Each structure stands twice: as C-alpha cells, then as structure tokens.
Image (tube, rainbow over all chains, first blue to last red; front, side):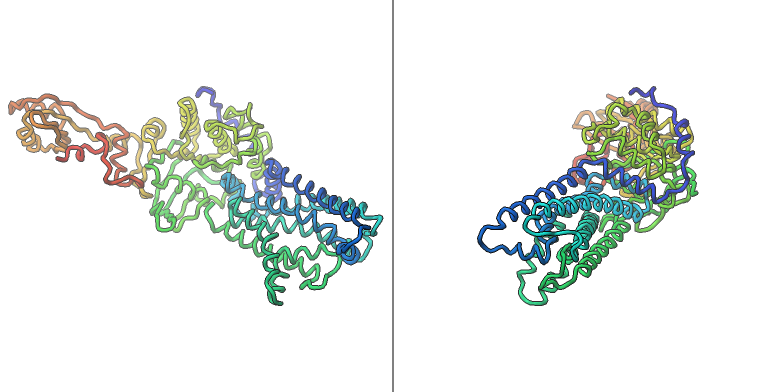
Length: 283
Length: 326
C-alpha cells in the first residue's frame, strides 16, 4: 500500500460515537467468549477431554463386563454395588480431567506467553473484572462440556454393565455423585486457571497442576500415620473427588460435600491470590 | 463519562526494576496536534515510560495522566488512547479479525468496526488468517489497526517503524503526520534521530530514564549540531596559538609530523583562513563540518547509553576529541 492510500481518519469516528458510553460487565463476558473460542487450543483440549473420558470409561466398563464371570478376585464388583460412580468415573474422568487442567492453565498463561495480556489490559485496565469475566466464561464452558461428558459416561457405562449390575440415577447417592462429578470438573478448571494466573508460564503451570492432581496424592498416601492420612484427605483434588462418590468409603476423612467444600476453598484462595497478584504485578 | 483531552502529562515518574532505575523522576508534557518524538538510546526507558502511561506497569512514584486522568480511570480507554507497543501482543493462533473483534467487544464497539480498521491498514485479504503466519510488516499494521480501533485522540507508538521496509516506514510516517494534523496527540518513540527528524515536530529526549531535552525538533537540531572546522597544516603549533588567541577551541589534534589535523570549534572557517593568511601559516585543508543529527544525538546521549562499553573505541564522528588524544 502506498502512502497516498492512507484513508482519511475523521470518518472513522461515527461508529464509535454512537456506541454506549460505559463499559458493562456483559461486554467483558462477550469479549472473553470471543477470545476463548477463537484459539484452537480450546477446541483441541475439550475434544481430548471428551474422547479420553468417554473412550476410556467405555473400555474399562467393557473389560469389567467381559471378565465378570471369569474366576478370580474382582474388587470392582463389590465397589460397583456400594459406590458405583467411583468405578464408572474413576478411569475415564480420572484421565480426561488432565485435559481440563491443561486448558484451565492455558486459558490464562497463553495471554502472557503471546503478549495478548497487554492488549487485553489496554482495553480493560480494571484487571479484576477482566479476570472475573475470564473465569466465568471458562467455568461455563467447562460446566457444559463436563455435564455432557459425565452424563455420556454414566449412561454408556451403565448400559454396558446392565446385565451384571443395575445402576440408576434413582438409587441413593447416585444422582448426587453424577452432579458432583460435573461440579468437580468445573471447579478443577478454575483451580488450574488460578495456578496459570499465578505462574504465568504454560509449561510451569501445567506441570504444577498435573503434579497436584496425580503425583502428590499417591506420594502423601505413602507416609504412614493418621496425620499424613488427614493431610492426604485434605489435598485439593483428593477432597474434591469425594463428591463424585455414591457414598462415603471407609478411610475417607471427609464426606462428599465436605470434600467438595475443601476443594472450593483451595480454589477460592488460589483465585484470590491470582487476582491480588494480577493487580500488583506489572503486565 | 470520563472524556479526556489529548494532553499527556508525566510528573516525576519513577520506575525501578530491582536495583535498576528504568525511569528516573521523569516529567514532561505531550501536546495534541503534533507529532512528539520520544527519543533515546536503547534501554533509556522509553518503552517503560509508555507502559507506565498506559497503566501496564505501576510506577514506584510519580503520576502519568492522559487528559488529567490515569489510564485506568478512562471509560472505554480505546476510544481515548490507541497504543502500539514494541513487544508483540497478539496470540499467534488467533485471526487478525478475531483479535480486533474481542478488543471491539470490550469497548462496546460494533463488530463492523473491526472490519473498518482492517481496511484502514490494508489487511482485508488476510483478516481471517492466523496472525502467527504474518510478516513483521503485517503484524505492525495489525497493531496499528488495533490502536485505531477506538478512533482515539491520543496515540502512543513504540518504535512503530522497527523492522519495516521503506514503503512501510513511509506509510507509518504519513499516517502519523495526518493524524497529528487532525488534532490528535501522537507520541512516538524511536532510537533513531534521523527517523524523528523527518517525522516529529517536537522532541522529548531521554537517557537512563532522565530527561535530556524537551524542545521543538528544529531547536534541538540547531542547538545540537555544533559547527566545527577541520584544519590541516604543517605548522600546528603556530596555528594553535592563532586560533586559541581568537577564542577558538581545539577539540582535537591528530596526524604525524609534517601535516597535523586540528578540529576547531568556536571560529568559522573563513576567520581561521584569514588568521592563517595574516600569519603566513600554510594550510593544506580547511573544511567546515556540520555534525549530522545522528552525531548530535549520540553526543547528547553518549553518557547515558545503558549497555555501552566505556572502554570501547568510539567512532570518528562520535568523539573527535578522544580520537585525537595522543
């Protein structure tokens, strides 16, 4: 383009002047929705979550069903009666949740690694509303996709196991556990987002979130003694997962809702720390 | 609505990163209706100052305001201020249009505003392509589109022509001049004096985070380009006497036996010639030299270059006095 083609600028103002004069929070939600849907990492992470969760759950249910009448020890059989959702969700969602962890962290770290945070903060200099909008939009997406996935896993696996054991939403604690699994995955996303906002680097944040979810709990459980047992019980995801169980198991330090409350508390503390640092640190 | 005028004011702005002082009690004003160049060597604190004005960094002390308001007090800030930062601020996986769209949405601008600024910078053909594949020039144009999104009355541009080809440079330059002619405030940083000389009406020069000069470009050039005269003579002792007797100053002396070169300031070339003639001193050369803008700028900021090696040999043009030290 040659210099002569620079268009005259004054005409550009007309559209702007007609616009609303105050920034509403709704606009921030719309903008965050545009941001999150316009990068491929969102689509790929969510797709990975659904495929891994549904696929792996189906595989495990199929193997359990296939081996049902073979001789030998089957600890799953008893558990399927006392706590069916722990078995159903344990495998597929346990693995699939890592995709949610990655996405939650990336939603915020990608702003820093790409520098988009500067454009974002120039447009919305009030940082806490921006973070709030981002967290709400991501939580909503996480909730919807988790709900679809959890129900899909539930109905597919119970259908596979139907000839051996009957599991329905009407049984005591089952509906609570299904809803609990959806809520757990939603809060897990926010937990990862908060760590992403604290660390601000994708690799570091993802490593820390995944370590917290799958590395630390088994290590802590190796420590003998009741104190270690309590520490283990209060770890974020160990506590959080309890709400996806049909009933409290022997050895669980907390009930389902108590555990979920502990997990929410962890997440809230991290989100507050994230917001505090977001305001204080240079972007 | 907080509607700000186009005046940028920095008052005693100070920013430290650890022990390092990036901006040191910097005060200046940027007026609307002209292009104000923000000049300084690399590491002088130009980008940090701009980030402080834009509220991206928090100063340890001092204030920066736009039309009397801190950046975060602006409603719809993109309608008041447009900024092009030197550091990349785009997600490589997002399309140009989606980048502008989300920015427009934060301000409540209609989506077609994103298309308007895409056309403004001539990126329509690649609007829906991911910006990761953009050339530096295209990225820079997209940055300008983002800055123009809100039709702002104030523009902050950090090294906007860095990495652009000559055509791109001319485009940006024309664009800035036109926007200033419309009464907008244009604050543009550069480490190149030559670029600022043809673009800026007014200059704010900083070094090591401190203000070095704040004047019109013309004044700055006149004040900085000190005239000197190169004189070559086989009789330097005699000439030195004549020149210093008339109030001239020998800035440098050089050369082996037979024909020494002297650099003289404070006396015009014709006067030196007359003095030499009256005393029958042979001159081999008498050349008036006008320091180039770049030299003037280097001279002015030489003490404030952040990463310079003080022991490194300086260029001829930069330090004639040092060159001639025996």
